[in-house]
Image 1 (tube, rainbow, N blue to C red):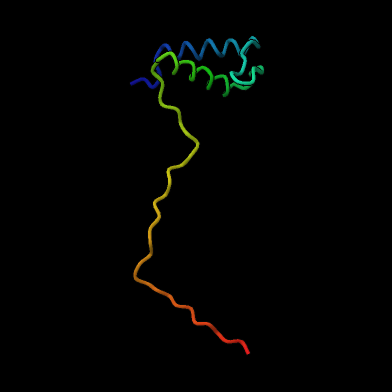
Image 2: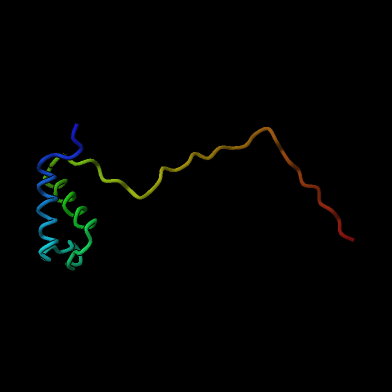
Length: 83
């Protein structure tokens, strides 16, 4: 089964052409986009907004590890008196 829909592919292709022409602008700052990866990210983001078939956005965070309690072994430290 395809990971991306046809509409998403067309959107990314359109954005990549804009980048190559030098007319693609970043959303917030309005600066010209030169990075290929950033252009693809913009295209996928626009495709998501329009409702095209695109996988969910990956987050940078790793899942939290479950903390386990060590049981059974109690260690008591004996204090040494220094004279």
